[in-house]
Amino acid sequence: MEINTATKEKYYLSKRADGFFLNITDTSRFVLNYFVQLLRPPYEFSEIVRQCYKIGCNSLPLISLTGFIIGVVFTKQSRPSLSDFGAASWLPSLIGIAVFRALAPLVTALICAGKVGSSIGAELGAMKVTEQIEAMDVSASKPYKYLVFTRVTACVFMVPLLMLFTSFVAMMGSFINISSNEHISLATFIANAFDKINFLDFKASLIKSVVFGFTIGMVACYKGFNTTRGTEGVGKAANAAVVTSMYLIFIEELMIVQIIGWFR
View 1 (cartoon, rainbow, N blue to C red):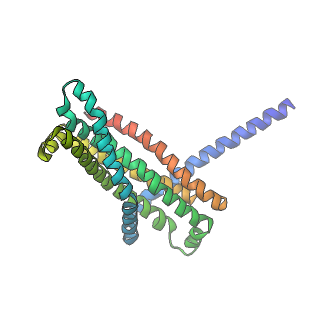
View 2 (cartoon, rainbow, N blue to C red):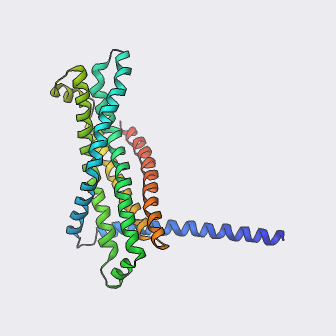
């Protein structure tokens, strides 16, 4: 009995290890296929534009509200601490650094992961379980090029634009709060807010946004393309797309901040 138990345990461990490495192989192949398609025209420009419009319109209201609230709340919470040291005049600089270096890219990515990632995962998952993707493959329509490449490319383009919009709205919310309390002009606020921000900060935020957008689009498409078990699997694919994207976004944020810190 002990020999049989040990044999079974080795079998299950071997099976799980094989499944783990097969999953890594499939994921790597799925991601690398994007760069292969990037070098193979023609491209579905009309579908890319449609996906960009869809991603931007679906995310804009929530991002506008979130960005404005972040600017107001962060300003209100930071004022007492700076006032204790007589440094309330540094408030615009603090908000500018916090928004452009960290808050805007991260908040935009998390919102898009929840809003866009779940939408893409559910949409492609529904197409998978209803065999629409297989039908496209049989008819030589290149489903990866039309469904995955266009959505990932749209995410790569739109997340940086949404990040810039989030930064703008957050700074406007901060200015309204500071103006009502410190009574400074818009020109003074802008001069102080951007005094400590350099080109490296702007470039780092764009790099973060591009990486986050690629991650959101790729994870959502992968989960949707590999949906199983009918309609139940569609919900799981949408949930997995959001959760996995958020985990990877936090990991990438930590890594990029560390790398950018080496150049400062």
